[in-house]
Image 1 (cartoon, rainbow, N blue to C red):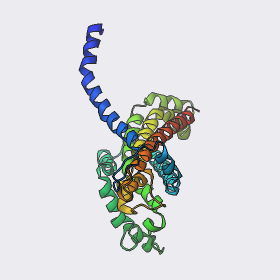
Image 2: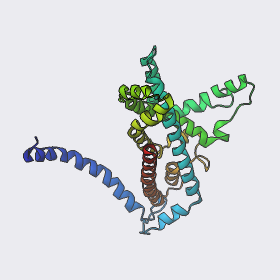
Image 3: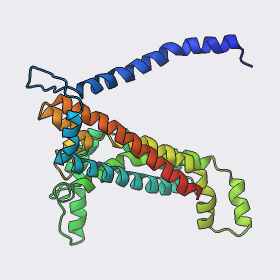
Image 4: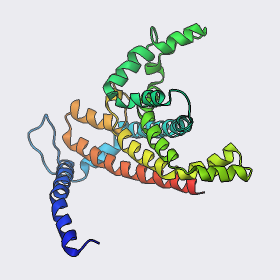
Length: 287
C-alpha cells in the first residue's frame, strides 16, 4: 500500500518529465496564438497587432471551405476503409492456418513504409495511366486506363493513406479480438446463435474500445496528412486539406499571421471531429 511519502516521491520523480512535456506543448501553442493576432508576413517589416482579423480572413477565404470539405471526406473515407477492412482482416488472421505468422508480417509491412515513399510507389508504379499495375490489369480486362491522380485526386489519396493505416487498424483490432474468451462464443453456439449473430452481439461489442482507439489515433494523424498530397497531386482545390492549405499560406504567400490563425482553427476543428466520431461510434456499438 502506497504511503503519503511514496506518493510524494513518485510525483517528484515524474515532475521533470511532465513539466518538460508541458513546456514542449504550450510554448509553440502560445507563439502560434500570438502570431495569429499580428499582421506578420515574410515580405513585410512591421508586425502590427490586428486582433481577430487573421481569423476572419482565413475563414472567409474560398479555399478554406474546399479544404475543410476535402479534410472531412479524407478522414471519413480512410476511417471507413481501415475500420471495416481492419475488422475483416483481423477476423481472418484470428483463424488458424498454415503460414499465419508470415501472413501477419506481410499485412503489417505497409505501416512501416515512409509516407513519401508510399506516395511515390502508388503514383509511379500503381496509378500511372500508362505503365501502372492498375492500368495493366484494366488493359488485360479490355477496359480503358484511368488517370487516377488527375481524374480522381481525392479518391487516390484516400486509397494511398488507407493502405498505409490499414495495418495499424488490423493490429489493434486483432489484439482486441484475441482477448475475447472462446467460452462466450461456444456458449452462444450451443444456444443456436449463428456466425453473424455471434459477430454483431459478442465480437463487435467486445471490440468497441479498440475501434474507438483506432478512430481517435488515426483521426489525429490523418488530419495532418501533407506528404501524400504534395507528392501525388501537388494540392489544388480538389485535393488540398486544411494542413496543405495552411502550409500554402506560408510557403507561397508568406503570410505567417493568417497561417497561424488557420493552425488554431485546425486544432479546434480536429478536437471537435475527434470527440464527435468517438461518441458516435461508442453510441452505435452500445446500441
